[in-house]
Image (cartoon, rainbow over all chains, first blue to last red):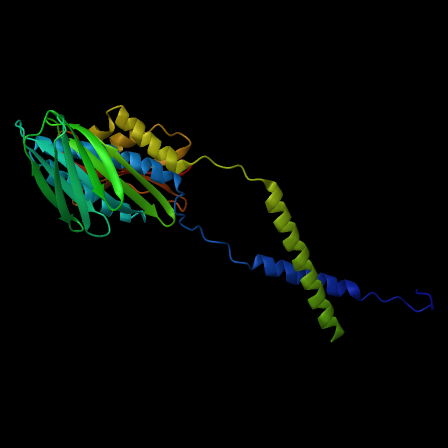
Length: 196
Length: 123
């Protein structure tokens, strides 16, 4: 009974129960989120880079055993690029290989796997200080080469392209490799160069 | 008609309260950061390479033998080996949650490139 003596009729709880049931139905009807494929974080670019660096050197060595080091390196770079595309990683690479032929002549090959053609300057400095400079214009996804004569046993090769400059201290009678690797996935970039 | 609006009001109130509770509970539950399975998979393949066993199995396309060497015990794991021509041997897991590590192999005694994929899935 209320203050006026009237029978107290409870109506509110019906609305509360109905509202509660509607809320439960609402949340129960929400679709369960599907498991989505997540692209890896940038951390994997580090170890992918290590793998590529190691295997590029390996490919060059194996190619040398078959007397085709540059072709092998070119083939493996393309293979690597195709594989990385499946993981949404783009590979840009530029490598320089010097081969001696047991004389004082060396052949320097440049492989361009960057986004565009590249003008590259190769400045060879011999032990005595004499220099020879060669200029190459290498198209995208292709290679170019230059020959240097009267090369001393130890020499420096300065490689200049696209505002990049690297001085390699190499030996004439050895297969040498310089490589710039640029791995990109979205905003994540791993860019590094090495010499072998 | 008043009853209809009462129901709408109570539904909105319930939605707001429950959403608030869900957000708060998610924030303070503090899920344990799992280890990085994809990185562990890569490190496992790298360790096998350093032990000189990965290449032997790879050039033989022996995915079962290589899988038996994988030192990961808190996930199910399978191996797939693909050669230069795109021919792949091995098993992909039948799971909705899969982590993958891909490892390049240029060859062993001759140039013959492969891709070794290690798949991890929850136990």
